[in-house]
Image (cartoon, rainbow over the protein chains, first blue to last red):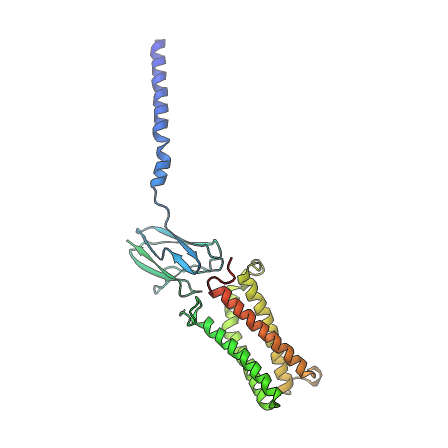
Length: 119
Length: 154
């Protein structure tokens, strides 16, 4: 009886350890496989990347890494999205729920423009 | 908002204001030259026209821009050149414009009471001319900081 209990507890321990090893390395790998959130960097009077392709439902975040303010304004009429003036390190996010191409620009510096292609 | 025509990142309106302000500052120097040539009538008309034109440019173009982009950030962000240059330019600009209007009213009209009219015209006019040019140079620095890549950048 004692031997059976020992065997059962050994098997249970082995199962726990196996399960732990089986799941532990998968978490970082799964994280590595996740796509980073789509982001557009604003720096030196430009949007990078100038054209970003995302899936329907994706949330795009613009981050101002420049040392002067910028805005992100859709060129669509009526405007689909429009940020306030973003100071250094400020962010603006927008979720694209419809497929299509959305052009945008900086209203303070009209030469700065970019595109989000939603597929 | 349309793109500018000077090849910088500025909108069309900012380029127009820059050129207008520079032209007006040169115009004031020309007006000063007219005074040296004793053509006081033309001198008065030239300087008055520029002072009034500048008042319109300030009211229509610069005050709204300052109100929207700079006012909400001061005093918190005065440590940044972007806001500091614009603020100093704005404060000195208002001072120069008020002083210039005061000279125009004192020298060219009888609207002001005798007591508060200026007497030492040359000193006042030359001082305001120097201040005006300092403001214009600060305006150019502000334009450069706001719209030109690579200048005054950290």
